[in-house]
Amino acid sequence: MQWHWKKKALKTSRPDRKLVSLSASMRTPPVDGDWTQVHILNAAIGGLQLRADRVPSIGETVEIVQRGLTIQGRVVRVVGRRFAIEAIEPIDLDQLLAKSDLATKSAMTANPGIGESPLHWSNRD
Image (tube, rainbow, N blue to C red):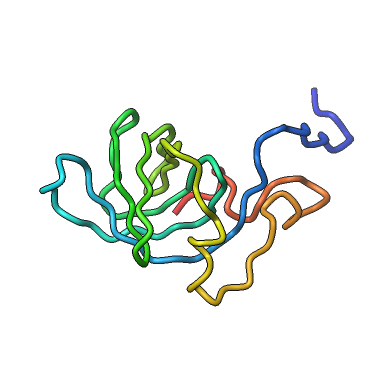
């Protein structure tokens, strides 16, 4: 059976996300681990969504460095080349975005009729 009306997005209490496009470096502890290039797709106070050629495993701890700002977190989701980390400490979004010269917008309002961002998990690389 198919429903003939559109499903409304559920309202969540998670922090607002910012759509971004930032290059960064990532390594997995210990500190002497190899650096790999990643791309930050969206950012929130509690974590990041990233894309990389070498994706870490769920549960792995990673360190992300972008223009002097270091963010440590645990990988909580992996889909294709995209993954999400939950930050160990709150992320200072102003500092992360300060030098980027990017116009950012809220991911929750990027597509107001649906409530999903253009970078939704269903859009795979």
